[in-house]
Length: 167
Ligand code: SME
Image 1 (cartoon, rainbow, N blue to C red):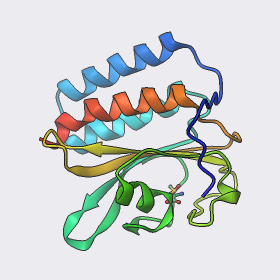
Image 2 (image 1 turned 180 degrees about the vertical axis):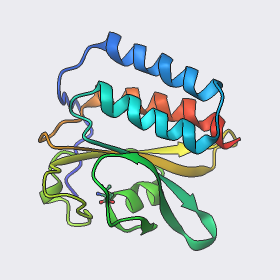
Image 3 (image 1 turned 30 degrees about the horizontal axis):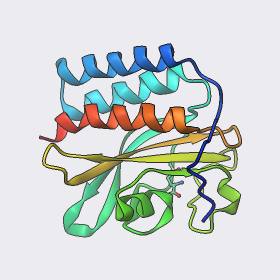
Image 4 (image 1 turned 180 degrees about the horizontal axis):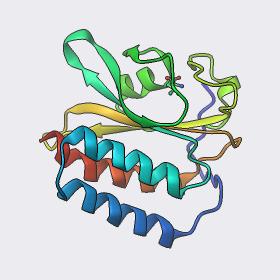
């Protein structure tokens, strides 16, 4: 697997932009609406604000089936609406319960392709308030090696905020 978690720079961003977006996600989470509506608005916010986030979506755990189901997303439709644990980058992140950052999807043998335009990907797990894995945030980019440690920290913070929706 081509997964280099150390010292990644990714596409430059401003810390201030990420801090502002994290606050906005906090407001979405604590505001009105059903969970799926809040997840959809989070996708729209991230995809609209960050230029290298080309596909933003959630996969939610179907524990009984040991599979992930596609939840709210923004971007091109994908054929991967259901992914068994262990399959694809999404299934691996679910199994390993950790963030996976793929700099070059062409070098990842377990990658499931949604669009030829996608060159790099990050998948961040979401845990409920009791610490159980419940799903993940998946972001694809048309930019090579788009995601760095700044994205990882930002998105892991977002997923900690979203945890409250699964309580
Ligand atoms: N690339 C993912 C599949 C989901 S699509 O990116 C939307 C994977 O390898 O699991």
